[in-house]
Image (cartoon, rainbow, N blue to C red):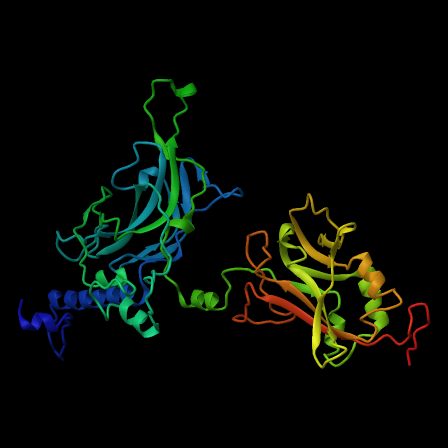
Length: 461
């Protein structure tokens, strides 16, 4: 290898006026552009499916078959060498599988390979036959025994390491190569940068050839293959015939993805996971008036005694996660002998009247906590003893007014998917402000009671 070979990787012909162009010059120019495109695809976009390549399923999520054929939607992917794999869509059957076909039942990965058909080089121009002098690119499919999930996890940071942003970027992109157990590993994409495509082998379809390397090809879906011989009709001695059967194809588990810009914007806006949020609170009209607008005692007494504080969520919540430690109300009262405030937790359970934390359906009806696994809302009502002492009794710590803080512990709640609460306040819009597992809080002030005793008429001056 000469010194020039280390410097130059691209070779493009330069054309001049009145130059007679040769086939070698034109082909060399096209080859150079093709190599540039492959390097750009490999380095910038990566390896995997960009769009499509989806096996069509039925209402139950199983592979939809018609006489052993399933429909694979149009798709675009990049293999490990940056070659584009474009499929215009169509039906695929076991007859369309190249290479070795299944000889036993089991799970198989449908894999897309880069394929090529050379031009017709014989004959005399002009070419009028079906085979014109064009090199055709295409896609063929193989089946690989077994289905393994694609690893999309982040690289592990070694225990005790302090890898920062710059080190992470430099290491992952190959700027700090070598074996170093104290930092993150180099991305495997770096090793593929200089790997050249291997030999193409016949696809047994006209003159098509394909790259058989399954590490280069793109996995698409996990399909189930089984013996489909009906021995009651065809006889008990018939040889097995393995074909696709209607089972879930699980495409999202096995395929690597190339993240398009529109998809990246969606992921940056937290569109991929829907977290439950507080949809509404029954005292929102108190909050809308502003912090300085104190709630009249009569209004507070009406809600806390009769209706309770009602909260609805945007997604169903597991009933078992709604309890006195995850949903509660605190009263913050001034100290009598100092300028401090003290916090008192308002009880919602008792030894005799059991729980007063009701779970609700979507229409506001109370559900049986013993049988309802999921609910849409919760109603917080204090115990009868507390109501008698602090609301309807002769003496109360609240008659002088005070502050109240309602809290939902987001890290203790779980929706029907097992996800924590996004604790953003009601009415907050826009992505990028999610607060998964945080505490949802709502605070308001209650004015003092005008009358000295509950049995006396309140003075609403």
